[in-house]
Image 1 (spheres, rainbow, N blue to C red):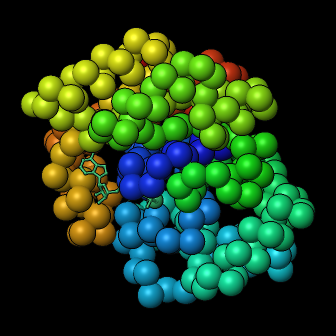
Image 2 (image 1 turned 135 degrees about the vertical axis):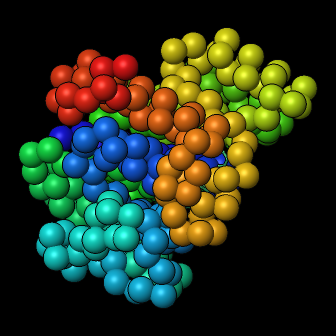
Length: 266
Ligand SMILES: Nc1ncnc2c1ncn2[C@@H]1O[C@H](COP(=O)(O)OP(=O)(O)OP(=O)(O)O)[C@@H](O)[C@H]1O
Ligand SMILES: [Mg+2]
């Protein structure tokens, strides 16, 4: 079943927030979703109500070839999680080197998970390029690159037009479908409008969605809750639900079966 990967060239743009909440919306639409955290920050778990003090994980022990089934953690939010796990700097560097030398350390369990009927895997990644992301892209069905609605993103847009950037470029080479989300859009600022126009013009239908800047997002993370559970009527909740519907439509057109729900048909 499908693997959906969230990535970005820049850090702090909303990858983890979107990965967690799109996973939640897909689950609400009837998909059997599992989340995978490939970022040593371990932040994905916070959205699912799992405290950081829990050290167990999956990604950081990949060189030990763990059975992924025994590493899946049920979470208070109801989305099963394969966490990164607590790892120091040396362990993280050693893991990157191990996966560079042998990408199958990640690819083998991924293929096994994706062969499981019905599971939709949603992966969160560390910012920028990494050996884990490079391996992940080989199994990815849809890459979602998150861009912030800020001045630095404006400067990146021309490079998008020239053929991509980082993960998006690799995805193009590997023939992986790739889409973009503009996050933290603020319609009250002039720059926000300029960036949105530029993104629409340059990305066309590769712009999967726009998420408004919304204080409920930060509050939901502080409350260790999914956004839809914390503020179901918020603007960002609606924006993210629309992105999940877009994902379902794309996966369906690619031949991946989704649940027959109203959300999927919309
Ligand atoms: N739409 C939004 N509106 C308001 N705040 C947001 C929105 N999206 C994300 N944020 C805030 O932006 C910050 C960064 O979000 P997040 O941790 O998801 O980014 P990230 O890309 O995963 O970061 P990193 O690169 O460090 O992994 C968080 O404090 C989050 O609450
Ligand atoms: Mg993150």
